[in-house]
Amino acid sequence: MNNRSYLLAIALVCLAIFFPHLSVVEVNIMEARNFITAREMLEYGNWIHTTMNLEPRYEKPPLPTWLTAFSAAVFGTKSLFGLRLPAVLSAVFLVFTFYYLGLQVLKDKKQAFIGTLILSTSFYIVFSGRNGQWDIFAHAFMLYAIFQLFKAFETDQKSWKQWILAGIFLGFSFMSKGPVSLFALLLPFLIAYGFVYKYKNFSQKIQPLLVSLLLFVIFGLTWGAYIFLTDAGSAEFIADKETLAWTNRSVKPFYHYWSFFTQSGVWTYFSFLALLYPFMIKRTENKKMYQFSLFWTLATVFLLSLIPEKKERYLLPVLIPMALNTSFYIYYLIQKSKELPKLDVYLANFGFGLIGFIGLIFPFGVYFFFEGQMSPHWVAYFISSLALFSLGIMIFIWLRKRAFEKCFYGIILFICSILLFAFPMAELLYDNDKFLSLRTLRSIDGMENIDLYSTDRLIPSPELIYDLGEPIKRVKLANQLPQNGQFALLVNDSIPADVRMNFKTEFITLFDINNLKEGKRGHKKRKTLKLYQLEKK
Image (tube, rainbow, N blue to C red):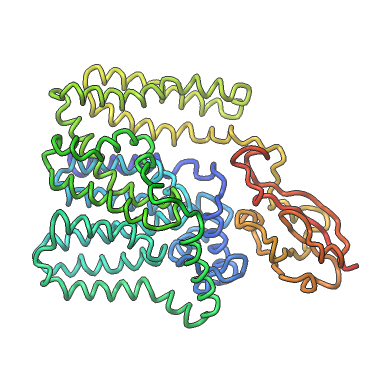
C-alpha cells in the first residue's frame, strides 16, 4: 500500500470509531462542566472570565471550551453530537499526527500504519475521543508539538518552522489542561529521546528554542496571567483548591498504575508482550527505535505514578507511546508469520483467538443476557451479531493459515463493527423507570417562570445543571432567599433546618437523571434532585 492508501484507511477507521452514536452515553461530570461553561459563553458572553452556573470557573484553561462553544453555536447547546464533535476532531488529529510521527521514528510506512490502527482502537483513546473532556485536546496538541520537536532534533539545521509550530502547539496544549501534558507526555518523550538518541548539535538550536518558548508563553500563559490580573481573588482560591486536590483527592499508592497496559482494551495482551524487553529485543530489527518507544512508555507511567492523585483516565498519554511499542510485536508477527518459532505461534494464536472467540459468543451472550428486552434494537442486534460472528469465524480460519496480518485487520474491523452496529444496544442497560429529566421542570404547572435557588451546602451537581439548561441561583444563608412571593428550591437531600423554619415548603417532584436504577453500581445519588416550592411564612 502507498501512503495515500494508508491515510484513506486511517480516515475510514476514524470515521467508524469516533463519529457514530455520540448521543448514546449519558453526559458525565467532567463533560457537564465543559458543556455548561460553553453554554454560558454563548448565552452570557463569558468567553474570558469563564463561568459554570455563572460562578468563576478557572480550574481548566478555556481552549477546549471555546472550541466546544463554537460547535454548539452551529449545532445547538442541546446537541450532544455538536458538543462532543470538537473532542472527536481532536482525537482524529491525534491519530493522524501519530501516523506522521511514526513515519519519522520508524522509517517504515507499514509499521507506522499498524501502530496508528492500534492507537485508534485502544480503549481509552476511543473513550476520550468520544467524550467532551479536556484530556484529548491537551494530548493531541502536545503530540503535534512532539512531532515537530522530533523533526527539529533530527536535523542539523535550525528548523525554524518546526520550532515555531512546536511552541504554538505547546501553548495550545497548556491552554487545554495546564501543565498536565507537559509532565505526562512531553517530559517522558524528552527523557526517552535523550537516553536513546542523545541531543546532537543542540548548541546550534538554542536560538530557535528560545523563540519556541516565547511562543509557548504567548499562546499558553496569556489567559492565565490576565485572569490573575483581573480576578485575583477567585483565581487564587481556585488555584489553592486545585493544588490541594492533587495531593489529597483520589490518593492511590505508587504501584496503582502497574496494570496500565489494560487501558489499551483489545490490545492488552499484545501490549503486555511488547513491554517484555528480554523477549522483544530478540524479535525486532529496529532495536534503537524499540528502546525509544519502551522508555517513553515506562517513563510516562513512572512520572504519573509520582503524583498522589491517580485516576484511570490520567493514563491516556501512556497509550500513545505504548501503541508505538505494541506495533513492534504485531509487525514482527506479520513479517515473520511463516517462519515464527512455536512459542510465537502459540502466543499469536491465543491473542487473536481470544478476540475471535468473543465474536463467536457475542450473538448468544447478548440474546440470553437481554432476553425479552431486544424489541427496540433487533436491527442493531442482527447486524452486529452477523458482523462479529463472521469476523470470529474468519479469524480462526486465518489463524490456521498463519495469516496474522489478516487477523490484525480483523480485530480493527471487530472494533469498528462494535462502534458502528452494536454500540446503540448500550441503551439495553438503561433500566431506571424513575428517570425524569430536569428539562421537564419548566413544563410543570407553576414552574414556568419561577426563580430557581439552591443553598451553598446543597448545590446541584454539574450533570444536573447541564440537564436543566439554565443557571441556578446559589445562596449561603436562608435570609438570602426571596422574602416575598414564591420561588423554587432544588436540593439533593433534605431542606436545611433554618430554611424549613422560615419558609412554607411544598414538595413538587424528584428528578433522577441516572440511566441505571437505584441500587445498581452506576447509580449516583448526586444525579438526583428534589424540587420544592417555597414561600415566606
